[in-house]
Image (cartoon, rainbow, N blue to C red):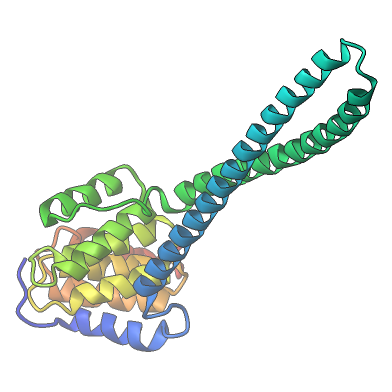
Length: 266
């Protein structure tokens, strides 16, 4: 439904967000998310460069050892002719190759360790960001589709990144408010209720949002999940009064009744 003004329920949500939750979340949650992703990207690049440099050093060492192996083979051939003078030279070469072999083994171990650490780091990034650190489509329709795809796959963090980028790049698009609503839903799915309310509050600030009713209703759900029954009940009641045709109205009425009856809301 289209709203051309902020409803009483919307004002209640804005007030709750401004007063009650000020100590729970940061208003720069989106900026914090991007900073974290960029930091992870830079760390990943640094580890990749270190691994490549070590691999290059390892390759040079192998080439040096190959060269020494050739030298010692030639020395053996000469020794087979009973050349005593070359025997001493061969001993020196053998010492040199032993030193190089030890160095090679150390480099190999260091290289293997770095490769393992890098692979573990990549897996950790993927698990924490769910692919969020990857590139996103430039086209807004493709970007929206990607966000929806990630959300459908329950890939909450990655979906959040995509929705946030869509909202930032397409502020005048009719789906910008929906993007913030979906971000709120990802937080709800992760049990981050205060963060969810902050995002739902952004939806209410859109004067013509078609998901304002859902944002307010779900904010009340978040308050209930936090055990803030009085706030939840008040918001449910404002919601029921302001959105009599909302598909969430029946559930809101039931939840109001349950809170009154049991005094609990979790």
